[in-house]
Length: 441
View 1 (cartoon, one colour):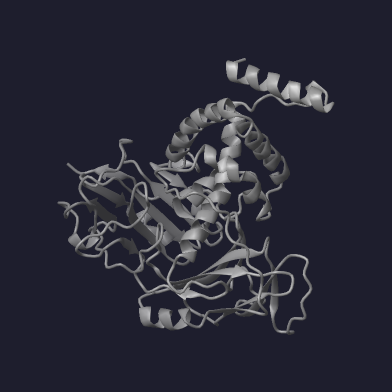
View 2 (cartoon, one colour):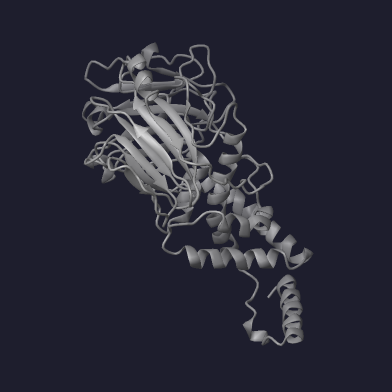
């Protein structure tokens, strides 16, 4: 046992004797694994709080009101340029409920995705998941509350007093039509709910993730939003035990801080390489959106691309390394080569897309062409044998049509996110991944 743990045990045992509590009731200081598990569990909630704080700083922000993002908007992490996008925060209490109105949409992909304050999907409103009511009005209510709702209004119980709603309408070569439908989504509220302020976390970004300070806010983070995970109670007790240890004295805090520096660095690396199956030099294909007890995946998704949806709607793949397992570097040129019988068009019932973002902030990389992604409707030229090549690099790549070139920035590390919307069984079973990035010399 190290000196810090011996000191901690002596102090807590003495305190218990003074208070008449048996010394054997005091648990040993948390192990490195216990600290790691507690931090991973709690950071997922903190990342959602961080997003709420950032969103509330937006111009004209208001709860229970949609923001209709302009087409091509890149003002958030890992953006989606394939859809007309809208978003809003819901806030309700026992005396009020929010109302989302979804327009009737046919012939193109759409969904209204509702998520809780841990990043768990509550529901998707569309013709696949809600075939009995794929459009129209739904009341979003606090659990257990009783409201006199109109007969034609659906009811969706939230997990806590706040939720995030994201709407997506596929462009499908008709951006004006998509925007017209986007504007028909509405969000409103009955009454005037009391809205709690977000937990006042210190500012942090993906490069400087919060470490030991996170546990100073543990109780507020845990009690401000219900977690639907089946093992939440056990994990929250573990978090509280670590928080108690961190608060027990300067030496204990210093020990936890030292361990967390390593834990955070490992998480930042593993989130992009070990959060899901790693096949064909892509990590992905794992079912996100609802995580059960996979707290690492939930934290990794909230870190690298918050607000992920369920596998029935979309499966994601992320590449940060080339086919030789070297980190992707914007100075280099790469080629992705899809054989004719493995084209992305053939593995989705809706559409696919691939976007290039910088690391570690996951924002688009500006370029003169303003070309940030490709998708099912991009004017990509195929090879004579029916295969498809996509090039990535700071300038056009020899042997690949310029129309198939996705620009990078010299000296800037990057990653690719590949989305498969309404993926077919071959994707859901893990039998298809995007083509690897081969270095082009």
